[in-house]
Length: 327
Image (cartoon, rainbow, N blue to C red; front, side):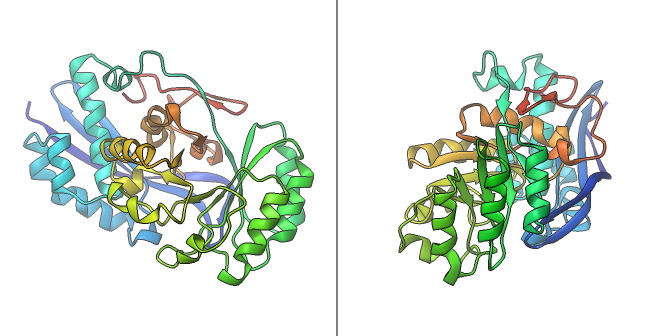
């Protein structure tokens, strides 16, 4: 039986509404890529992201255009040259990792030199809202070890103070999603420092973040929208202290591993993050994140339902994937 490619679009409802500075969503719309040969099937999931000019249709079309190469036996290394970074390549790359593991009988973890990957402490995301509503959400999750709080308005001081008061002892990441105006940047960073915030993600718009190199940063600042792949890193050294590696940005685990290695060489702290997707999308990222300083792989926790089988989550921990799911 020759190698075949299947492309499926799926929608998983979000529990409630997920709100960031750019808007709200009520479902996680994902693309599932399956590569089959004989009785072996490798799967990969991606989340097209409009912020980067992607739609469900455009990403599915990208994968479809690569069908002849994929069904012809394209390798992961060849894939890096055949498709650009982004969600489409991520789905194919992760499907190939899974396919290789199931074909060889050797897990992805072992291929990466991870003898016994460990459960990780993951952040849990609190959506952007009015300060009192956010405080209630934080209070309800104050037993977690790490919270990621969405901010990104011109005046977030009340939100920062409210969430810290609601959870005095919890580690907190603030994610502004490019939403802080330049004239409030230093003020917000100062308030974040006073509140003992562990990390601030992407306060300024990508491509308009030069100010970060000119000011004192009293809190660690992490690049997200400003960094996609290894080639972006060198230009960000004076602006950011950490980078957020997401497989849908890098175009898969293969590039993400190379990017992490170079980022560590450049002394960036590593955060491994995600779009809102299912356990299948998180699974390779859990292996990538084994030595990361910050982990934000809570996508399935935000869904009303997940894949079966899914990743194991308990309290603030997420466990490495079982091979029935991926890898």
